[in-house]
Length: 280
Length: 292
Image 1 (cartoon, rainbow over the protein chains, first blue to last red):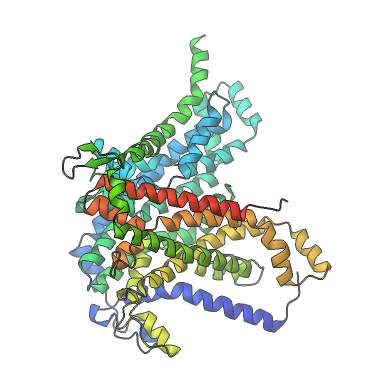
Image 2: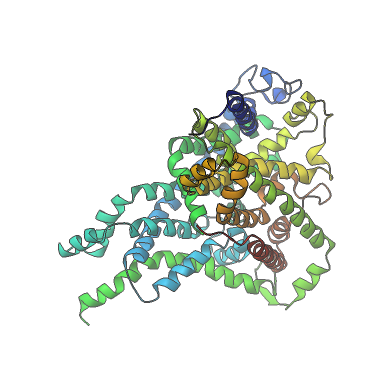
């Protein structure tokens, strides 16, 4: 461990503190403001004081309105349903493929896996118009189908799970084969339970990606029945520009699930992002 | 071949089939459709398409708004990507020490990365409020007069850039941290024994060893920033006077506001070509020269 003078350490902490403040201040302001009356949102911003961030007359009015009169409850339920459906179906489908690519030698395996990796490099935004044309062809526009089905198969999950399945000892598989286990039983009863950390990471990233997804739901759905939370929020700001209290209440409500997930499962989250970087 | 033998042969394909089917239908097929869509003129209501060859491209290249969007996209990327990469790397080096409280700082840094881009855009939209926004009251503390931010054609792009930079740093910081952890600790000890300063160590050892990670971050970040859409949709709608209209916003507006799918596909295709050229250049310039 290197030695460091006290003043250098203090300077480091001061720098870290200042950066941390810059990073959290915008959300803290929004959090405080979401408990204000609309007329008070901008009242205490200048000059800067503690009341800039702490609501002077806290109220739940914004939250009451968006969940009462507006349909934010429905939007959040839609997001939750879509995110859970994509995550559950995705974990199953992608772990099957990850297992297949990791534990079998078969004709065409390597080119097929290369094809999987290619899709990882094709961002949704680039194919959003043709995807819209394809999904419209299925008659799925403005339905849950459009939101869930195209998102299930995912190259990153396949890649991550394949890595973990590859590391399982071959003896384990051989022993199960000798005991007369079929391949599906080996996958379901032996391999899957052993790669739980990878499942948590892949599932967490899939859930958050769906919860945050905006561009595709914006173009693929239009009626309130299928509006997800991010689209609901974005439309709110363009349609009701001056109801800041409701807008911020919605923004805070939309952030709570991901913030909770992040702080509870931080380790898996960070691991997932690091894996993305090591993929090269 | 016995029935059991056939089942064994089929097993691997059954495992990978569902995922491959999904990728084929919703990734590869759209890519193929996308390659051809730009040569068609789509009727807005019926969706019927008529082949018009290079018609969309001819129209596009004659449209001043397209060139404006190209310039804006270039400007946005030329600032955001280097800014994010340098700040993220600096932050990673800063928090990559074993000091008490470091995990708390890292968690706080990560808050912008955890909230969604839509939420971040909404919050900053209000922070940039020219009359009473938080940004102007912070500027007032250091004696700077109120700024118009998003309502000014001169400042809007800069304001969006600041928000996007703030939102993205921590994500790339995590990847840099993983890269830093992969550098063997003995390198640091050896350098310190040789009497190298921390600054020298960073320039001569850390940076060269981190080139792979840097290349990945630069390329991945470029792809994301080229395709950024939500901040413009929420904060500026491409304005004021098209000062924040980037190519992706043009794609959206043409496809889903004017329902000109063919024309939008042409913009999308050119966006992809420009992006690929930039990425190839980045690979060439940053190609790793050190192996370890």
